[in-house]
Image (cartoon, rainbow, N blue to C red):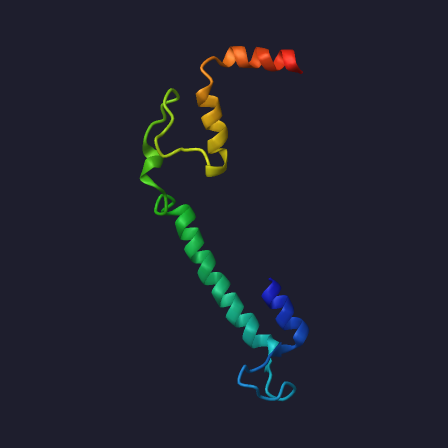
Length: 106
């Protein structure tokens, strides 16, 4: 939409070869309207095909593995910026005592 608005405000698109701006412009209507409409129709046809006829074409096979709520998948790991905090949590053997200690401090 931004592309169409900007072309419409300028009144056309000039040639990048450096031709004169007032004389050598291509008019906005009907050329760019038809070109952009054709591209939009092709995109919508492809999008509709993927959505309605073959939605799993771009999916990952891991999506069909039944979930096990007791086990975290191996490929799920914390982000690198959380790793020091997870290391601190792993180094504390008794989490209940730590929370009670924080309660006493604050």
